[in-house]
Length: 336
Image (cartoon, rainbow, N blue to C red; front, side, top):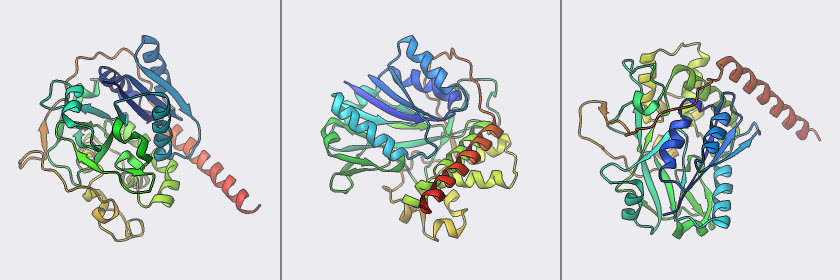
């Protein structure tokens, strides 16, 4: 089975090696685009490629970040030059797992290929008791949420639909056809995406600053997307320092209805999250009174490459400078 994945990464050095090693076990080729990283993400990718791992390393330097366009362009390239059985858009903090199946390949065979496959997120949450000296994210963060509200899904594209794909929607949660309609979907019965969006105070601070500032144009075009970054960005703007307890709180609420409801009306328009981002009904993964359940992602991997973390102030200053330059270009164009 030939599986090709593609990703865009920025300042993901703390998780990138684990991400590549996990998926290289079953992915034929991993197209990974580095977007203006200020840590050593690009160096780690080049080192993994030099090892012989199936990594196709690329980079982009544009300030504006339109993930949907980048992913759509790569998907079209893959269709033209490869003959994949499956195409997977993956973020660096997502780990494809097959609970109860022998392997991801076996799970994909069970799923069938009649339509776009929807794979559910399972959000993992850092705890104050986690060993902060353990560099491997899969070994350090081992508890996940028992309920996803809402249940977000990411698409996986079988060979049968690749020619019909016109555009991946922001976040790769849906796929549009040539006619502009949502392609038919099927919910996965055997796969899940273990999602690790919150890993440390430095990591989520840099993510919120760089991510929110570089995707404001996406908000203008598509609506209130990336609201989970705005929540954290606004919190940082109030000069709130993130503690380890705060990280647990952020992990539990990440991309949730609770976060959405905490945002001002001028951003949400007063609408419900379900109306703004229609998704299939939520799943109850376990009937539990607890918020979290222990469910570590199996790994026997060893990390070989040192991590050079981005400096928060550098990320902020560079993002502010580049945002000002983008505004200057826009202003000059409007006066021509």
